[in-house]
Image 1 (cartoon, one colour):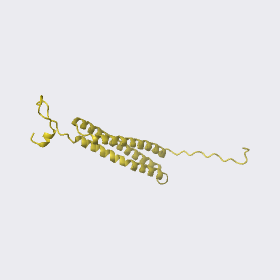
Image 2 (cartoon, one colour; image 1 turned 90 degrees about the vertical axis):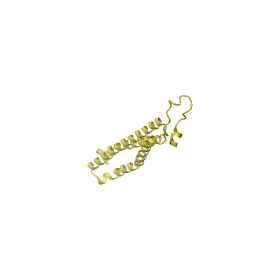
Image 3 (cartoon, rainbow, N blue to C red; image 1 turned 120 degrees about the horizontal axis):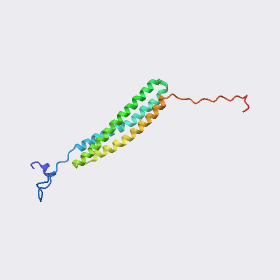
Image 4 (spheres, rainbow, N blue to C red; image 1 turned 90 degrees about the horizontal axis):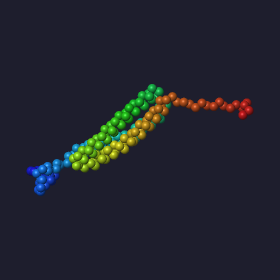
Amino acid sequence: MSKPEERIWSRSLEGPGAESTPPLAFPGRRAAEWGLASLLMGSVFMLLCPLTLLVWASVISVHEKRWDKPSVNTICTALIVTEFGVLVLILVGVVFGLVGWSTARTERAPAALPVAGTMLGLMTLLFWIIILASSFITSHSLIRPHRTTPVPPSVSEDEPW
């Protein structure tokens, strides 16, 4: 016990059975690092939500006049594949938070960052699932052939009706 940190974080060696109890270790920072990684990933992807919606809005507003059908198919497919990639990365961030939470529990360290990272990751995951569902609906309406409603024949004045 030559270092002051060891004296602060160790148990008293006085009393019965003192020889069998090992000193407490200084709580590590691994849990905080896992939690910080989860928090950063969740916040980055949360900030990307409005940008993704703006990209879809530009696809919807521009596609009819400037792009042909194969280009619309390609951009819709690329956006949906990218959204699935983001969804996987968000899940990785949630796993980081859960690992940090578990590490904090085993090391008896504070779990604020892992808990915050997990909560933000779950909220971000919910938002991206909603964006992905709306992307499927939007791309389906852009890709399928548009059906025009038939115009009823005009009523002539010769008919008795």
